[in-house]
Image (cartoon, rainbow, N blue to C red):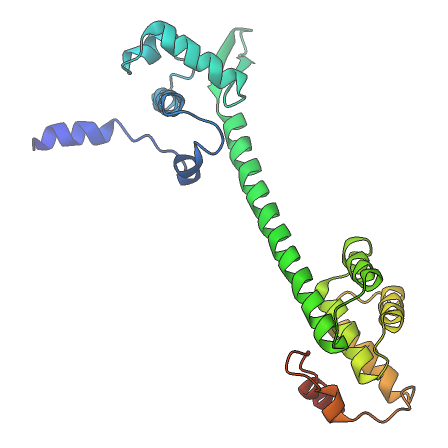
Length: 239
């Protein structure tokens, strides 16, 4: 290859687009033709031509002029690009194409993906909670119990980990019922418990102050293959 020609090509610079756009342009509603015109807008901008005419854009594609106009109109109506105006010191008004709306749509796409992922994980955790409670109670939950379990998560915004910790406390205290677990969670809320560490600290203080008078049978605590493993946690408390 002619070295001088290669150097000339390199001197003209490069046109770059974010990978997230290349990977997701169809997901935000762009067609291949619209994507190509966006690429051409970026190319013109690299040459400091911020508002190329329809004719200029058409010359770089195999589109007819009316197709270019129609496609650019589509980009504007979809909110993929915008036309911005600016005024210089001599009061001259100039216009330019802005891709800021396009970047906003990509951000919204990823926020929706992350929100859906969080929702999926929350549903999975909720399902696991039902299984844990049923394993500890040794039976299916009643409709009222299932509703209360959902309320802790949905209405009270209590994390699944804290609900699980409250279940452990109820098992250790040999008071395995929903009203007792509800009182534990209410007490933690009043004391500003936000993390598992906070809950364990308060539970530790509760037991050290001698408020638990019943003797706990460790074999009963670790009573079923599907139950929450409590033995090590109990031993750690006494450590």
